[in-house]
Image (cartoon, rainbow, N blue to C red; front, side, top):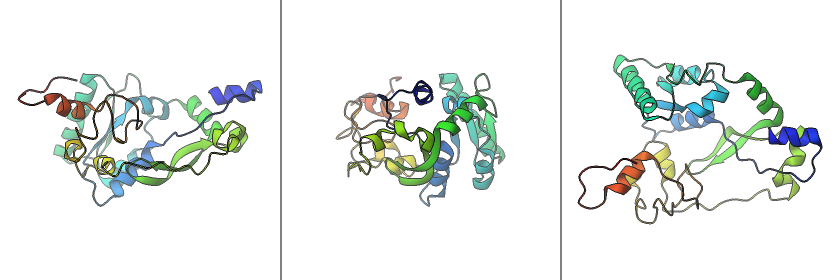
Length: 226
């Protein structure tokens, strides 16, 4: 919306660096990996509130896997997990919406139309996985004047990932976070090495599973809630 407004107002001192991603291609890339061990996915409710979940039934059918749209409150997460477990026990592979108070099948069509105007689909590199074709967005030609990469000629920059980080294996479900050799040592909550869900230098909180492991501490039998 900011880029759309900037173009409408004729602003020339505004530019953006785009790193937006698309979820369905990433899920499919993970499911296509021979090392994947995922049996179900919880779909992020905030993404689906805009994009809907109409893109997911073909994935559920193709890979025979349950997909459940889930919110972020504790009861939302528990309900999402409960629904996936029920589907697995019953041999079903469907897309369910456990966040109907926010998410609809079609999503926000007006927002989707604006996204389609401002952006176009492109390949995107994912930390720990590599480049996934057609899994990201870049500014469309009509809005390319606001692209910081083009304006400041900073294309072709490649980041160096930590050789200790096994975030790609975590994303594919091949290992749990605590099975990475850097977990809790070189890679901590305060200084994450290169987890796929956070910026490399940002002191953002880890996932609840990671937090539970880190907070256990020596001699503690019970996990403290995050």
